[in-house]
Image (cartoon, rainbow, N blue to C red; front, side, top):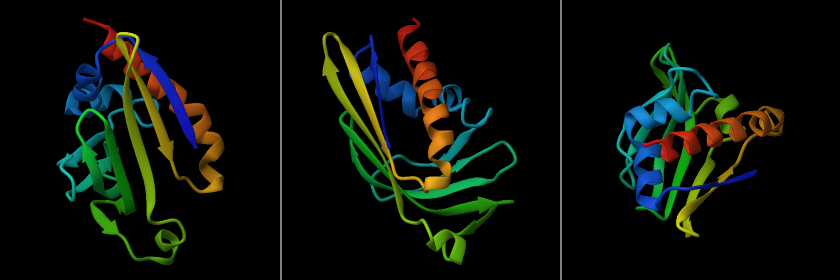
Length: 143
């Protein structure tokens, strides 16, 4: 699946607000209010993307070309703080990649998101991603 938005802010601003803890919680609210991450955005590092109750996804940062491209390799789930990377349910979809591309355009930034999701989640993603990207746009365009 692919989603795109134009943001009237420089790439450096969009990158920073998208991946800092406070900005991340703001723009990901349409997925789950109060979402947060644990870990580092550095290439090769392990990350956890979590809801307030501590459940969510476990991933690795596959590629980080600062202010250009970020690729997240989802490798499992987290439930009640416990990671699952090898159950049959997880193996049915993992790994799944979520890629972010940033391009300067007309004094602003074009953000493109590519995400691999199971077919059963496609409708939900089509509904939520535009809301999340609109929240990111508002966050970045507000002084």
